[in-house]
Length: 270
Image (tube, rainbow, N blue to C red; front, side):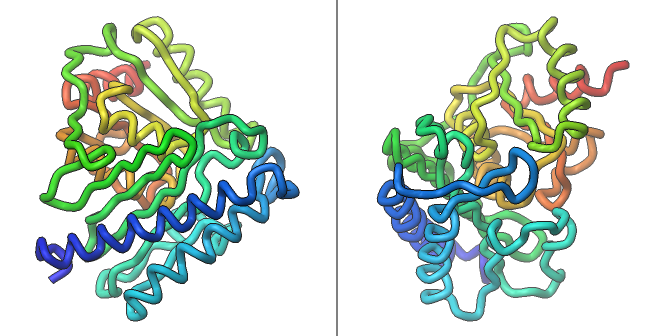
């Protein structure tokens, strides 16, 4: 069973190993890469591709019967396009470099993010920030940790006392909806942040640094690991229409339970 604690620890160990290998490769490439655009303002470097190859080698070397879904192999596909079949083997869903624009400008806010999806749910999540030397890790039913110490979402009781985070897509037209949400929430939240990495933003929610997160245009590799981290740290997630969270949908609202509920209400308000 994929949710057997012994098996889950094996999966988690593999994800941590792979994240460390991928992150080391990102640091090896720092300042040596060239940049190109997948689409306007949506960047990719040799480092993304080199990191993904090494992450894949580790995971598929240990679990050759699993599926591998990497961002760099999925250009042009929608979130729903990469959803595994219901009876598929476990699928590793990987962003080898989340926060590529930050990385390209040597802004220390990027990471390797690795999630494992099986039987209709995310069961393992690892996010590694090599610049801050922070390893966020979680598995279903086993809790969430930062550098091996347990973490919990914040206890902030409402949006008014909260620091909220969001992410904006590269596509200018798709940014407009979130700019309206940003305008709306400015009147309610203590502060708003955009750090350029969805995976790190979600890890920060799990660690109680951010109190809530919302976005309209994510991909599974952006959110898979973070979803496990937040759930195991006591947080809640849903889609922006209030239905159940689905990492193969582009939208989500996450946070500690009180803030997440109120954040959703603000987003739904006319």
